[in-house]
Image (tube, rainbow, N blue to C red):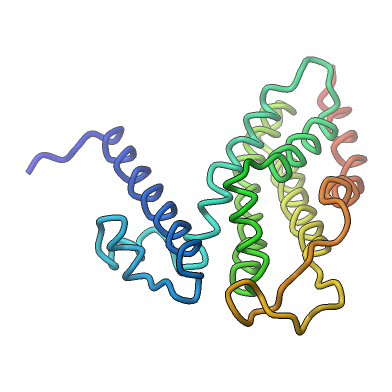
Amino acid sequence: MTTPPPGLRERKKKATREALREAALRLAMERGPDQVRVEDIAEAAGVSPRTYNNYFASREQAIVSAVTADREARIAAAVAARPAGARLADVVTEAVVEQYTNTGEREHAALLLIITRTALRDAFLDATAGIEHPLAAVIAECLDDAGTYTARVLAAGVAAAVRIALEGWLQPAGNEGAAGSFGGGGLVVPSGSLPDQLRAALAPLSPAFDAAERRTRP
């Protein structure tokens, strides 16, 4: 049996992941997340449950992935494309705000679903950790400083700040006992402006970004 070239193998893996997350979100929107099993998602995507488990650890992770997919790469790409002379802290902040708040109708509907369920909210918050590695790589390039921990620490700080902002935004607004759209689970009404909360959470990192940039200037 001939082994497919790496490019083809990676494309097939990407297509499978996309099919799984799209099936997970579609079924969750149609039935409600509590009525969706891993087996249902796998069948809808045309793969086995065993294959599903190679990509996602839970149904919640797959559902959330349909909303957060490629967000980390888009943030990193926006930072990599920063204009000459632009302050790195500002570019990172605006890239994060753009990708977390400029959502289309489909993503907005999915987010409304996510905030009605505790397990989905937890998976959504956990997904912020995915920012760290691609952002660290591009920060290292911007600073021409791949040999130290600086870029990794800054990127980890960004991921933590985003999680903290989202946790604050998703705090229940005095309605912890309310029912969600698909039954119990704790309906959360997001509080305040998400862009404002993201900027406020990222602001303490600005001095560290500025100091790192100063060290790399000629």
